[in-house]
Amino acid sequence: MNVLLFGPPGSGKGTQAKDLAERLGVPHVATGDIFRKNLREGTALGQLANSFMKVGALVPDSVTCDIVADRLMQPDALDGVLLDGFPRSVPQAEWLLGWLASNGRRADAVISLEVPEAAILERITGRRTCSQCGATYHVVYNPPGATCAKCGSNEIVQRKDDSAEVVQGRLTAYARETAAVLPLLRKSVATHDLDGTGEIAAVKARIFAALKL
Ligand code: AP5
Ligand code: MG
Ligand code: ZN
Image 1 (cartoon, rainbow, N blue to C red):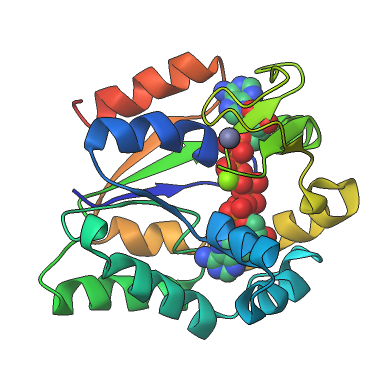
Image 2: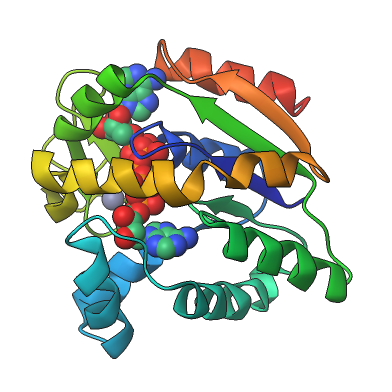
């Protein structure tokens, strides 16, 4: 099953993705995580992506689509993936739907998480992230222990693009380039518009119910 997790920055995509991917039995593919991993490893892709991420802008479509194509061809992704943060521009969405069709695959469902902007700002500024596995925590809503509950690493940090200044850039990019993706996906993929507010467990229950899991 190929499922797309859609929503503004801080809407809870990464938080929900871990359990959902496990339940679906597919890998969690998050373009933001791929870019951050490349940056940590000092690759050319990481340097390039960071020049956009640090101001909250989208990484160019051609670069992003190429890395997704590579990821979708890996053996563990052939039977399905959970895409988090992709597609997030109209050209990316058109590319993805075309690519899946020409490879005999399809997008089965879109989960769209709706969260008002005030809650988004509070979530993002309180977020802490495991730099090893990408697991997300929140100083109030999901406080991390001394080590990551998912992978045991002690590198739980604040993401560089979680500063108030960069968050504004990310919200602008979302409004300008990403919001228009949802009506496009809706035309051909079963789309579930879900309330992303409330307890993390309550949001998870809504997602599982929508997908009949
Ligand atoms: P990316 O890493 O995808 O960031 P994003 O879209 O801005 O989304 P976030 O990761 O900030 O939010 P999330 O929805 O995952 O929320 P989370 O679960 O962490 O992208 C980063 C950058 O990479 C982009 O700006 C761009 O430059 C580039 N990029 C990535 N993909 C791209 C693409 N396709 N094309 C071009 N460029 C691309 O939750 C947030 C916080 O809230 C956490 O602290 C969490 O604990 C807390 N929380 C979650 N749920 C709840 C709840 N129910 N109640 C209370 N708190 C909650
Ligand atoms: Mg995320
Ligand atoms: Zn971890």
